[in-house]
Structures are given as C-alpha cells and as structure tokens.
View (tube, rainbow, N blue to C red):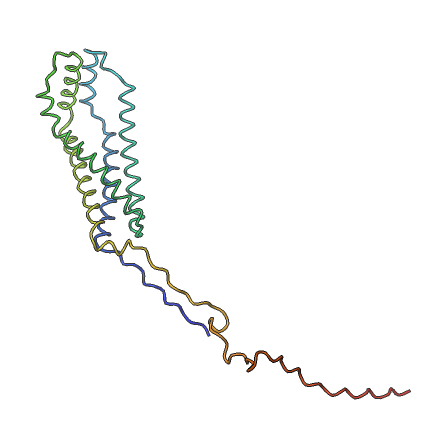
Length: 236
C-alpha cells in the first residue's frame, strides 16, 4: 500500500516583489536607451570642438576622449546586465539576489544622485567659477562652456530624464524589496518529511512475525519425517 506525499503549494509572488521586478527591468531598458543615446551624432558639438582645437591644439587629446567614452559605455552596459540578472533571480525568490540588489542599487543610486546634482549645477558653476589666473583652468572652463552651449536642448533633457527615472526606479526597488510583505516570499522553505517507500509503504508487515515466549530456550527442531518406503524391485 502506498501513500501520496502532499506537495507544498507554490509560493505566490507578492505585489511588492512583482512591482520591484518590473522596475528592475525598467532600469535595464533605461540603460539601454542611454547607450543608444550616446551614439547620436552631435554635429554642432563636434564643430565647436574643432574650432576650439584649432585655436588651442594643446587641448586635443583623442586617446583620453576615447577611453572616457568607452569607460562610460562599459559601466552602463555592466549595470544593465547586472540588473537583468538580479531581476531574474529576485523573481524566483532568491534571498542572495535580494541582498545583492540592495547593495548594488544603493551604490548605483548614490552615483546617479551625485551625477544628477553635478549636471544640474554645471551651468551655474561655469558662470561663477574663478579662473585664478591659470591659463589651463581658463581653457578648461571655456571648453566646458562651449560644449554646454552647443549641446541640443532635447539631448540634455533626454539625458537628465533618463537619469532621474533610473534613480527613482532604483530607490523604489530598494524600498519594495524591504517591505514586510516581501519577507515570506524570500524566506527559505522548510524541508518536508517524506515517509520511506517500498513494500507496505514503509510500515511493518502485518501480521508481525512470531516471537518466542522464552528467548532463552532453543527453538524446537522440526518433527522428523517417517522414512520413505523402499523402491519396488525392477522387473527382469
């Protein structure tokens, strides 16, 4: 006789966790959009830089510019891949992925908040930054000012909007994964005892075997059988 072992019901993903997963995928999409935006040609910025380099050749450093662009794109791609992987495991209820999301999300949110504050304060800083009589500092300020003036308004608005939306989404993910309703979903399931299987379903046979009343007495030998009759003689 066999017995069916009841299986525990599947865990239901809370609305807070589901929303956090959607927001993580939104962060991935925003980072991909940011990468695509970086490949948009800015003809006016290129023209202003060429004029500035013609006046001050010492400012041209193509190697540093390329390295900076590659580094920025690499960080954006890595962040997109990291949030995509974390979103998959968070949706499965992985506690390590939840903790990693808090750590990575906190670091990224801090960096993006600093970058947002810097981008918003750049115009005011360029207008109020003292040169101190240093020619190199004056040229650096002039270069940054010309780039800011030549950058299209739509490009600045799009970059700032992507940064703000990504920052808000990451902060909401951190909050949603920390609410009490999400704790049960990430709690490790307890092991379910499974009874042994086999003949009889793991239970002792019925009826039980006979047990001698006095274990000290040797068992009674089986009764002797009468000798077999002799075989009849064979006919000649």
